[in-house]
Length: 342
Length: 261
Ligand SMILES: Cc1cc2nc3c(=O)[nH]c(=O)nc-3n(C[C@H](O)[C@H](O)[C@H](O)COP(=O)(O)OP(=O)(O)OC[C@H]3O[C@@H](n4cnc5c(N)ncnc54)[C@H](O)[C@@H]3O)c2cc1C
Image (cartoon, rainbow over all chains, first blue to last red; front, side, top):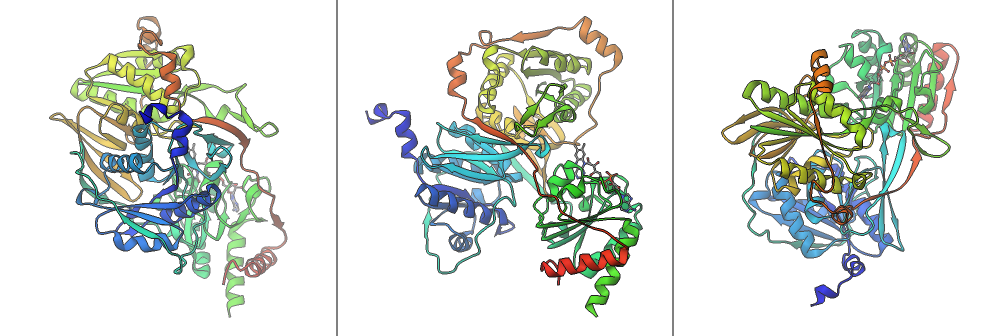
């Protein structure tokens, strides 16, 4: 009877708390998860509700503590053999059951390989909307509506989406978009174990997982020295390697340099097919600064551009630019660094 | 074997401008094209046609102009093309689009595979395949390549950031085909002539699909609250002078800013 009396607004009001769905990778919590719980923390504070993390897998209880240190009020722990390996349908089903039961107001996923595979399926199952690939999350406090902004048209247009009437509101958050909170060991939170009901037979099975490319050093480097077509040859990259060695940096490349065959694919930096990075310092040598390249490096804290063409677009987003020939400037920099060191 | 390939017409991103002052898309000179990612799905379906005699049906939801990409698909040797077009479909979000396309898929019936692209260029979000799979209660393999269809099952590689997983799903299944999974096809000239002169594109609207406007509204979840021109950033400083001088200045700046040891 009560069901019939529920108006859509009641249904919205029934939903509370902000969830971050943690990702587990090789038996540890993937860094995106701490970003998600940080974002959930901020949203929960604005909405006056709890920030909660969902942790799924097998033997993952030990990973819960840091989620609390990073901002979770509650960690829902779902441990089951069937969850030991990520499978879309199983994970979606288990999450849908939990969401039906607990009725979160907002669910955050990473805009990662797994998140983009899982979140839309779950959204469809829950009959709700998904704000994709958010680089900014805001909330309309009065209406309790999540606003998710994402870059479209290669970053040319920022689009803000909302899911005003359906609950929960789901968003995928682009890695690097949110700064995680540092772990605070004095933070307290609850661990709640959820028993996973028997999971239906899945129809897509994982036969094997093959690691192909070694994790590029590039992804986590604090300093990156990257070269483009302006480097001129594979040999030219040796010059960049020297500079990188001086700085303790990793070497990267534009698609242009990759296309020329001067470097392997694991060097390719960019937003469309390349590796997305956000180092403290990015030094671009002989890179014109195409939009796709920019999208891959825009999270860099400080960008230095060396290019002989003063009109190269890279100067539009570099913090410091040097107009000149990289074949002179890079050796000069190496010399200078050696001098200041000794 | 029957393979259904939903394809989408998009703006060629090279012809789209953003009005900085108004923060909206300027499409006055924009040209339409087949979403590049969908070409991989079509090519994969056509490979199954060549190698295993599959029948390939291309469908697209869109305005009447979207007939163009279906003609192009026919010219590539697709067997049947259906345009889902109705005033009521204009501007729907992905969750409503899934309901419309799923209705058409049910009507076509008796299918083994649904192949899509991964993400539409421009403003795509990659939700279509997983949502469609869920709506039809079918298994999904996203970012797929190396398909093998045999014994009522499909085996494919799902691309991972650091490699791939080999997945196996029972048919029917929904797969989004990874960029670069194959060589996309382009229409042949005789194929193109035939596609326009001899072949037909069926057009299905609301009624034919037995949908009501209410069903579409009910399944619409999201709305765009606003847009802004992107990529604004203050111009940086330019260092000039001899290489050795410039190198010195840069080094000092980086040290000063604590950006290097
Ligand atoms: C769908 C799609 C996806 C893409 N994805 C990516 C991506 O993820 N990442 C990416 O990087 N690109 C990507 N691209 C390609 C991108 O559009 C550019 O073509 C590419 O980034 C250009 O590489 P570049 O800057 O090295 O080369 P160029 O544009 O050729 O620039 C070379 C620059 O070097 C300068 N130069 C030349 N000689 C010297 C010298 N001696 N000293 C100093 N400067 C010198 C020139 O002035 C010029 O500015 C993509 C393109 C498409 C269509």
